[in-house]
Image (cartoon, rainbow, N blue to C red; front, side, top):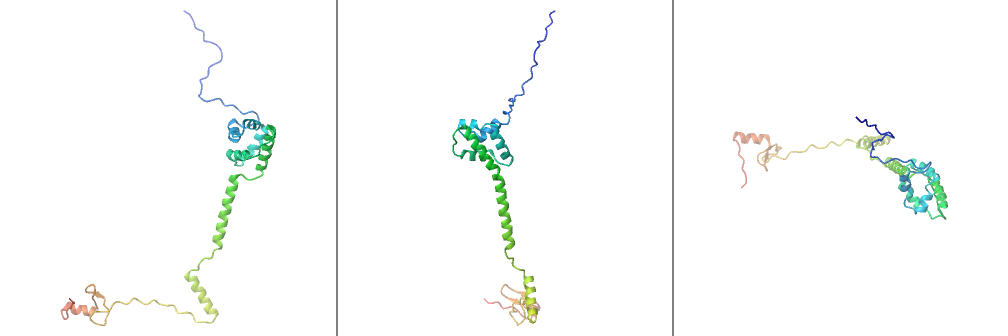
Length: 200
């Protein structure tokens, strides 16, 4: 009977299906960050900016809320420098200037708050129409100050009912759509002592 000896050597570890992660060179941006910021530049200029000095200038801006596309647009608008070394120096200096300013997100929030404050101030300064009670109070106060008697309060007249079609009384009862009679005339009709003559 033959005994099989298991092979010796490094153990095999099953693959997880994930690509290995590589750390960027010390102090530099990751490949993705570098592509987002400088991938639109000529190759020589982009390579010259893949240095720790540029990364050190970029990271504080990203922490302040700058987006890579915003920085890329501003770096791309810079005039051409005299070479890769000059490009790196110019970009680092330019990023330092941006670090002293507010990010676009902060500027937008500040402008929005300023507009809201101005709108509230305008609303507070606009005159508000006084209510009828306030107007009446100040009119009465002015009349007292001038020694005038209080103005009598107008009492609205009660609506009058249409007249009776048979006598001068109030026509409180509908007989037809066009004819109204008072209570006395209605009683005469009810008892037969009078009758209603309708026109043809």
